Image (cartoon, rainbow, N blue to C red):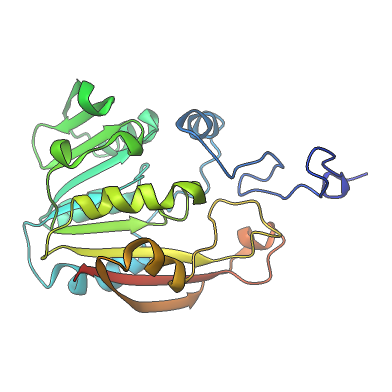
Length: 249
C-alpha cells in the first residue's frame, strides 16, 4: 500500500503530501522544524536566480530611487539579497537558518561580523564592506526597536510560509516597521491545501485585506500561473501566484 493511501487514524483522514515530499504535518512549523529541513538539504524552495517578480516590479517598488532600506523576511539564502545590494540599496533580512544566512555572505566572499542580539534572541551577521545585515533567529522575536523603519519590504512568499494561525502576528510586525512612504511587495499563492499539506498555504486577496487592509491600501499588481513539475508532484492541478503592492493609508 502506498503512503498516499495510508489513513491517518489520529485525524481520521488521509495525510497530505507537503512541499518536502513526505507526509509529516507542516502546518505549524517551528524554527527547529525548518532547520531540520535545511539540515536534510530539503531547500527546493530556494530559487537559484533573482525572483522574477522582484525584478519585474523593482521600479514600482523603489519608485526609481537608490539607497533605499530593504527588509526581506524569511530570506534564506535568496539571490535577491545580493541583487538588491548591487542595485544600490541597504538590505536587512532574517531567517532561522544559520547555514542559509551564512551562504549569502560566503558565496560572494563578503566579510562579516557576528553579534548576539539578546533583545530579539537572534544572531546578527553584518557585512563589514557593504550594507547587508541578516538576523538568524525566530522572526516572531523581531521588534521595530531593533530593526528600525524601512523604505521597502520584499515578502517573497513569507506570509504564506508561516503557520496560518500566526499570520496576523506576522503582519503586525511588518506593519510596525512601515512608514507612510514604505512600499511593501507581497508575493502570495492560491493553492488547494485540502490536497497539499504546504507550505505555502493558500492566501486570497480577501485574506490579505483581513490581515493588512485595516491599515493599508492593497493593490494586486500581478497574477500568473506558477505551476511547475514540482507543484504537480504535490497532486495539484492549479498553482497561482499573486503579487500585491501595499502602502499605509
